[in-house]
Every structure is written in structure tokens, then in C-alpha cells.
Image (cartoon, rainbow, N blue to C red):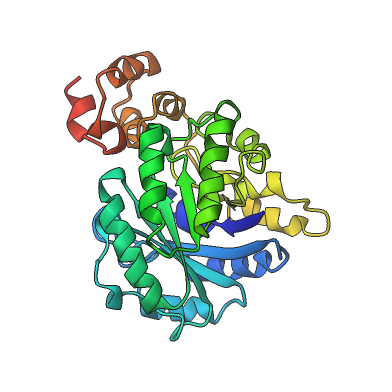
Length: 313
């Protein structure tokens, strides 16, 4: 199994992607104890919209500074919907030797254009490329088949499905995913699954990864990530002799705060983006009110937050 640490990238959602560089250096040092982790994902590259933090709008100067802090192979992510589509706006392994992976996230409506973009970016960046398909619990089997067929032309190294809403039960979908992970391997890519823990199933799903044919996954310290978080690093690896990684959860506790409210459980159940959960907490809705309003969310608005739905409810 291959592992990517996403503490900095996915965890950045909890505080606007404003990581102190002093912490980043210490955290990268701690990860040297984990040879199992192949890549460390830093953040998003030159994204527009949503956040202004430096690890969401990463540029060459920041990447150069971090490359000097570690010997680990580094990864960056882009959301195709919010990034430049000019490959020359991206870093290359020719200029940043530590850059080993770029992951491109695609929504269903972006699959064809996004796969063509990844093919061109692979030529330019001279590093590994991953196709990451958002919101997998809202894919029908026809959607999965189309994603795999289209991805075959992209020449990517990884193909990831993301349980973005945190409601996946892999145990009940083993046979279906076996079919598609087998196809992904035949195409020549490594199949991966990015797990969220909104419904408490992240570790359960992790234990079923290999049975479903997946060969790569993501971990984060303390589960830090968007919504109610990710698969916990400390649940996956034996920490004997490297318990010091847990010191960050105490020494840097302000950076590892996550919401604990019940709203994310409800969005996960209905395969709806957890942006609605954040807004429900802001509006001080009780969970039963929130559940009632979720019933009116369908189609495009399940994966794409519509600020009017809750406020007009």
C-alpha cells in the first residue's frame, strides 16, 4: 500500500491554509520517521476563489522554501475548476527536484477537459500525475465507467476516487470497486481512495481497501482535514519508537482543532457537501431542522454549495 500524507493540504481547510513555516519544518521532520509515506502533500497551487492563505495559493517562492526543509518527495494539488489551465503556470520537477507528484481534482462535469489537461501537464511537469475524482458517492456505475474510460487517455500514474462527503461504506460496495480497480490497473494506473470520516467509517473502509483492489490511500495526523476529517495516520501505522509524531497534537493543538458537531454526520448520510454543515452551525440550526432542509437538496447542489438553500429554508 502506498501512502500520501495530506495533513497540510486537507488540514488547511480548518484555518484558511495559513500554516506557520516553523511548524511545517517541524512536521516534515517528524515524517522522516515514516518511510511508508511516499509523498507529503503541501497544499493547492495558485488556486483562485475560496481561500487566500499561502498554502491554498502556493507559488514558487513558498515551494522553494519548503523543498529546503525536507528530503521527502512532495505533492501539490489543484482543483481543475479553480486553477489555471495553462501548464506553464505550474512547477516542474526540472526546477523543483523534491516535487514528485501533482494531483488534479475533477468534478463530473470536468472529466473530459480535465483528463486532456492532465495529459499535457504530465509532459510539462516531468513528475507523477494523479487524477482525483471528487464526490464518489454521487457517481452511478455509468459515471465510474466513463471516468475510467476517459482517464485511460490521460497517461496519469494514479487514479483516485475521493469519498469527499465521508459517507462511503466500502464493505457494501466491494464487488463494484473490484471491477473498477482492476480496470484502472489494466490501464496502467495505481488505484487510490481518499477517505473522510464524517460517518465514522474511514478506518473501516481502510481495512477493506486491499480487498477492493486499492493500492494507495491518504492519511493525516489526528485526522485533520475538511469537514470531520480524514483517515488518521495514527490509526494506520505502528507508532512504537516514533510516538513523537503525536506530540504535535499537544504542542500544536491550536492547529489541529476540528469541528465536532453533528451536522457532518447528516451531510455524509445524504452524500451532500459539508459546506452546508458549516453553514448550519453558523445559523445555529438544531440537527432536526438541518435534516429537514437537507431533504430539499438534489442534483448539482449536492456537490456544489448553494448559500440560498439553508438561509431560505
